[in-house]
Amino acid sequence: MITEMSREQLSAFKAECEKEYEAFKAKEMKLDMSRGKPSSEQLDLTMPMLNVFTDAESMKDENGVDCRNYGGLTGIPDAKKLFGELLGVKPEEIIVGGNSSLTLMYDAVCRAMTHGVYGSKKPWGKCDKVKFLCPVPGYDRHFAITENFGIEMINVPLNSDGPDMDMVEKLVSEDESIKGIWCVPLYTNPDGIAYSDEVVRRFANLSPKAEDFRIFWDNAYCVHHLTDTPDHILNILDECKKTGKEDMVFIFASTSKISFPGAGVAVMAASENNIKQITKLLAFQSISFDKINQLRHVKFFKNVDGIMAHMEKHKKIIAPKFKLVLDMLESELGDLGILEWNKPNGGYFIAVNTLEGCAKRVVQLCKEAGVVLTGAGATFPYGKDPLDRNIRIAPTYPPLNELEEAVKVFCTSVKLASAEKLLDK
Image (tube, rainbow, N blue to C red; front, side, top):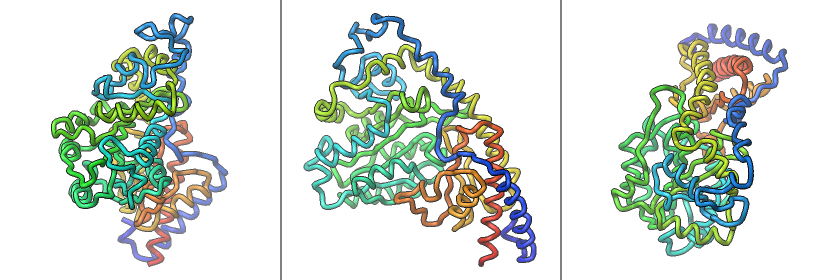
């Protein structure tokens, strides 16, 4: 282990890492692992979707309604059925929207600020203070939404089975200004953790001081499995119904990493009370979302089994990439004591933790050697990782040969940054 080396041994180790690092720099590579994007090979799987319509008649939904025209604000019945089955909710509990679940989440926060949510005594924006709980490490775009509205974000540690529920329960029960919490319950971004049954049930049993508290449940990776023994989570809406608190949760998902990221279908599920309140406000914003795209997805996937079969094809493409990264981390860094990581069963990321105070330096070294990573700190609110340890690796986009080179650079950068840090003590 590097941490047990003498200064002389550490200096020699650092010199060897510098030599290796300079060799990488000399290659002048341009490799990108900054975002969790599907590869071109994955996108090719969905190309036949563009040919599902043959004539005007084929562009009618199951009720014979022409999807080329206005109407159907909350989604066509075919799409509500498909995505309702996927999320385990009734058609009355779902809104099928446009191409982006992030837009649905942003709009949900915006509506809450301007009009409140179902059960609000006043809009969140009229409150003296609005706060959100943020399990960390987490999804940077979630945090960007709440920061944009001036909502104060509070870090909550993410354990191996989900957020620290002792802390969540205590905070929401004591502070009326806490109006929500961000959650990615299955294959968290970036750790790939699945919330345990106990954690989901504790969410459903929350007793917030704020009557209009909402759980923002982003089920972004609900079918993005990497193994033949995938993780599963309880249905949060069902669990909330058991406690009589079904109004407390907003569920989001999309096909962004299933079909086309820029032209998928996003959905929001919630209690019927919530859906009615949201629909009333949506009517001022739009006449309908893209029903042609909704029908296109229904015709292509047909049912939930069709989605799962499609995701098996995705798994065959990306699982080897995750294996490559995990195997290289183990072989290059496993016995050095300078990096920790999870082995996720699904999702789009691998999260690693460096020695304290090394993450920014590792990202900087990688960038200078031609490998772009997500910025250090991005997985925390305000971009501030208090320990400067967490880095998100996104293996899906690069081809295997480029990914291998990128991980080599990453491992060398971790070694070099760690040696520098230890020698500075």
